[in-house]
Length: 109
Length: 115
Image 1: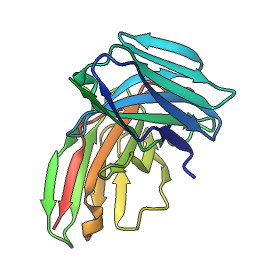
Image 2: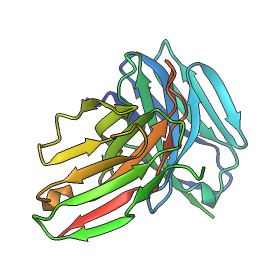
Image 3: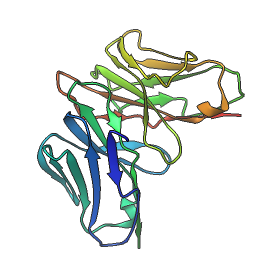
Image 4: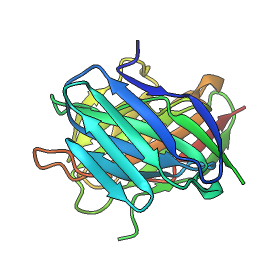
């Protein structure tokens, strides 16, 4: 079992829909990262959080440390949001960052 | 500073050849990571550095892989005697770590194709 699990693996939705991507992890962490990867490779950091909730534009990230779970929400989704969204954690022991396998999101116009 | 840069962006080589990738992190970042990603998979850890010290190397890596960060700035990842299974995107990321992990910044990656 991977230390970082994401669901769903693939998600197709219509433009305008509210999107939720989930991340569960099994280790104690000091931080959780949500990343976005567009076709062609480049990875961009969306959020880094260790508690509570963060919002940036139409993106919202939440984390529940006790339940070892985080969610990434996209409101009013748009085709340009189509990408792979990756959850990654920094363990408490300040070790290497562990990545999930990603969620491939496709927003239809 | 324009961010993390990687070179080359693409490399096609024949099996058995050696290849070297370079990563230039954001200048003040003390931590540098190398990851490998194949199609449809999340990034897989290879190794990471705190300044010039290599702190960990993945057990998945064979002795054909070596990485250095000689002055705590840029890093190189060398693959000797390449095999077709080495074909992947090699990603570099850096962060400023002062007891707590900072935000991650990634390069565009170096795509390796071994024929």
